[in-house]
Amino acid sequence: MGKTGVEMQLIAEIFRNKNLVKQGRFLRREAVRAVILADHDYLLMIHSKNNGDYKLPGGGVKKGESHLQALKREVTEESGFTVEEIKKELGVIIEYKEARDPDFDIFQMNSYYYLCRIKRDKKEQDLDDYEKMLGLSPVWINFQKVLVENKKILVSEFGNPNSWVERETVFLKWLEKNMF
Image 1: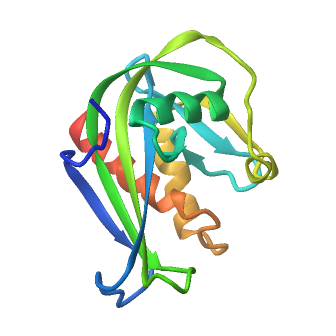
Image 2: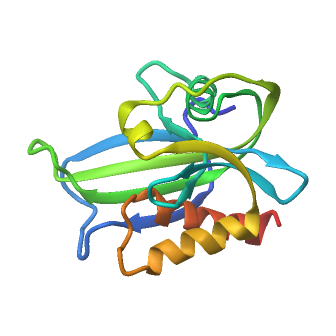
Image 3: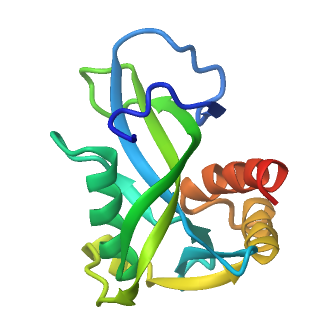
């Protein structure tokens, strides 16, 4: 389970640029996102102290890495917790935007979502520099509160500083319909 995710249910497609057409040369990236529950309605989220938004732990899949390997690495780096197992494949959100690389027309991000179980022990975070600058830290937070907080950011006058806020809010709305 979780090697390629190709067979996973499509949750949504998000177009970052108006009038973007899905044709031309694609630069594709895969990412994995962990859904970790506690007490039925609390989620492990990564909170940005600088922007106030929340995202699920996870990130990019490196070349040669399985989805499970990437989940274990990314969740441990961002939260300090270790993924013990993938309990269920939930679905994929595909994002499209104009590519910055001149060799490509479209950048496509495929985010695969997995319901995961973690080990109880916790280590120190191992954040990248940009993650440290954002003040990322793991928090257990009520599902409804995350939705409210991320929705506020999406409609605020300051706009959406992190593209993941829209993606994660779309996913959380789907999760609300399908799991809660």
